[in-house]
Structures are given as C-alpha cells and as structure tokens.
Length: 366
Image (cartoon, rainbow, N blue to C red; front, top):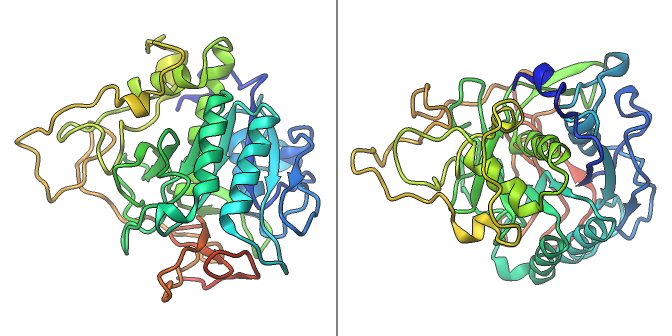
C-alpha cells in the first residue's frame, strides 16, 4: 500500500464512511474523535456506540483508526465513521427491513462510502427492500461496498447486498496476492483487497490478534475509496469507483471481470502517487456499464483461480488463521432460508434464524 507515502497526499479527510455493522465502540483509543453520532436502526434501539460483538469496531478501526494507544492503524485515518448498528440481542424482525433501513439512513446522512462487512444468502427476491435501498444510496451519490462472503470453500452462495447491481462485491486475497480460499466467488465480485493476516482486537482476550475474511477486505476497500475521494472531492461515486477499477492489479489470464477477483486488487497508490486513472462520466456506474470487460483468454485454464497480482501464481491459497478465538465456523442452514452473516476469520457468525436477528451464536475452529 505504501501508506506512509499516500498519507502525504491524502488521509481520507472530509470523507464520511458509514459502517453498517454491530456498532462502534468509541472508547477504543484509536477511534476517539473518529466516530460521528450514528443510530441503532434495530428494534433494540441501543446506542450505536455500543458494540458487544466487536466486529463493527474492528472494521471502523481498519478504516479510520489512528493507531493511538497501541490500537489499530487504519488506512484512512482522516476519515470519519458513521456507525449504523443493525443487530439485536432479544428481538426478531426481518433482515430485509433492517438492512434497507440502515442503508437508507447512511445515504440520508450523506455518507460518501457505505461499508457493509456482512451479508445474507438466499434468493435475491428475499430482499426487495434492501435492493431498493442500494439503488437509493447510489442515486444519492454513495459508494456501496459489501463483503462477497466467506463461503468460497463450501457452498459458494451469492451474498446480498454485495450481489445487487451497482454495489461493489469485495473479495479477499492473501499477502502474496492469491485469492483467499474462503473468499466467495461469483459474477458479482467487483474488486478484491487484502483479507488475510489482518490485525484486529481480539474478541475474547486483551490484545491484537490476526484474522482473515472478506469483512476485512471490504473495510480496506472502503478506506481506499476514502483516500481517493479526499484527494478528488469533486468526483462522484461512479468516478471514484471507475479509477479504482482501472488501477486495480489485474490477473494475467482469463476474462475481466473475473468471478474470483472482479476487476482486480485495489491499489489506491496508483491514483494518489502515480496519478493514474480517468474518472470518466460522472453519472455512469462502471460496474453496470461493465467498463473494462474483456473476452476470455483461450490459453487460460478453467481449473485455476486467477491471482489479483500479475506477479503471483494463479492458484488460490488457504487462508491463515492465527487467532483461534475470532475464527468462527459457518453453521449449515438446513431450512434453505437466508441467514445474516458477519465475516470473522474464514467463517461466519450467524445471527438468528431465516429472516430474523436473534442471539449471536458462535462455533470456533482451530
């Protein structure tokens, strides 16, 4: 990333990033002064500054943490976080309703970037309100980034809202640029970012632990967008996204967009330090226009997953999990209905039943 060099050009100043998640703990030293007044849109109606799970706070820290007090150093420390809490501990109501309410709240509060490090599987028809909310946010000028999911090694089901048209589905790569094994693939993946060996606050002990997941990759993608937008404040959401797509590291073989890496791995330094990227038309979403799409390379092997880094081998690598306490195993959804997941480690934390929020249930994996 060459963050130290990028910060001489941009630190994400003036950019509001909505974090739709479990809340954001404002007492963390690296988040003091970084968090705006948000809202709990669930029936619980608690403070958005409360986060008993820790997931939302970690995502906020990856985006805008200052590193103070030994905390997490975020990629865009000049940005501000708008927390939008959507979980509840003892109330049940529809996933579709709460997600849509959260997205609309973020858009109405003029969040330039909306980070959704969570999602829900199942048929897209289960989420008409969420789909409408994504369209609403895009029209209001927000850039919507959502995790593609951590089910790549299993059912590989599409995740919403990441899979809705116009939203940026974000996948994960490891530290050598290969697609992480857990990263869910599909034609809705727009970009990938680092999502392996990421430092986060441990959830069941004091200190910093390593983790991996598309949640973390989404947070890094959101921070990258904040850096670019702060440098070019007159650009629209479409223009910021377009240059992110243009300057992403592309796979050496196969077609674009790839079901594994979309248009490639984000590289904000190419925009900030090298001046690359043509913002293009302000009112055209480049994902919907499929700008930069290419035909398949006949020499590409269909059995191999492309790498986001032209320098690396095209085989996906297994994710590393050094924090056993924050890695969760996905629970099988036997009733074929949708469940909301929050990406932690290479697994997921399930919140409640088919279309409801309820008590958080975890199952660790060594």
